Length: 323
Image (cartoon, rainbow, N blue to C red):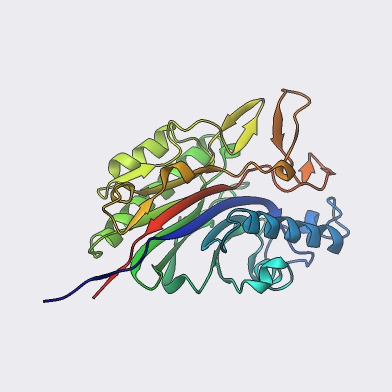
């Protein structure tokens, strides 16, 4: 007879955050990042860059004050150099985060990044999902943007599969919509493939979806994926992004339906899911009233804020069973 040793329940915290143009100050020959250089139109100096890194680090640390956030999905990050500086030259250096960066970014050079705390998340594997096109259209910033898929163990026990996303922008109109649908179709197939080989699939999709949970493409994802999913932002008040006075959930977290049951070894603490609305992340909305995210740029003008998006947090309760 096998006796199961049940550990005390532990919390596992995740964060997703669109950083709003986290560029370094070095010109990349492969990307259109000229405006985010010291002599570019944004006057992106070393001081402004370091301030941006400090702000991102503050958000990660504030998301869970008791322990380090276990996994972090970041969007609009310019590759390995920014990740290295963020994890080594800020307050995050004392935590010891490891990171993965997407190999393919948009034309400007920003992509998705996955930070993980190696004491609580053991990396097993990672791969990329992206659109393959014969011809890239002008201004189509998503033709090479990828979804980062990361597999790992929570507390060296249960497997989770995390998909870090930054879906195509709505600025592309019908092209943007078509690209979102195509990429979500590929994602759906990938999830079903992964779920078919897992004994107990724990799937998480997190990031900037550039559309709302009620949009046709996000609803279609839940319908067409054979593995049952639940969008945690559906019917939830508030929002992570404000446009013309209205809040919406562009930044979303979607999980396996089974993770909503406390019978699952890894289950969602539903009351924990929502935007991180710290006072330093907000400013007065003089046009529409109330408050709005304190962003880095207002149009072309530098105002020194954090991001035009709010971070979204979710806590999981983990009960590890080992023979």
